[in-house]
Length: 193
Image (cartoon, rainbow, N blue to C red; front, side):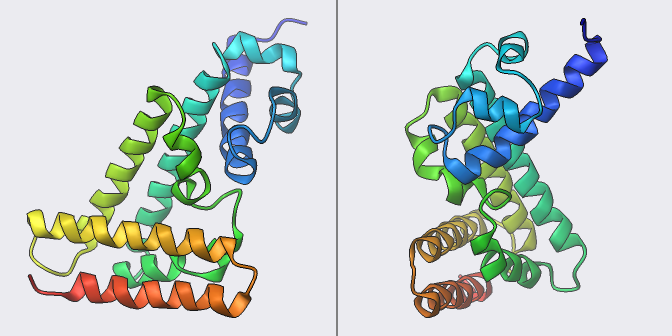
């Protein structure tokens, strides 16, 4: 049965969305094409009609995951009287720590992305730059190069804290990492340099 162009594009977007979630949950190499396509409700044979390779899908799914994360940050910030505090509260929470398939792609896939090809790394780089822009905009101090450096330190600290908190089996220690990072991120944001 022949699929219309519109349906084919809709199927392609579904595969990208599903891959974006499943890669964050299992890693780029932790799930095969058969299971990715099954998760999208399609056959493995349909894959090569939509993508050049698994690397092509990996790059598309990486972009989708990073764009989703940036939109989520912007949405949380826009809906709060204290945007930076809302973002810190969202990111450095136990809910986010547990949210592997829909959480931060930098945390879920950062080390995997570093070993991928240039196209995948470029999607992550673009997403990291977008995250830094959001933090720059939310910074309470005057704008400038020091603000951008602060945003870089804050993002590094946040990503590292969630990564470590996901590793730990000790719930109390895991929470202490999130809390300590939240305090330091607030301190960095408020520091006058």
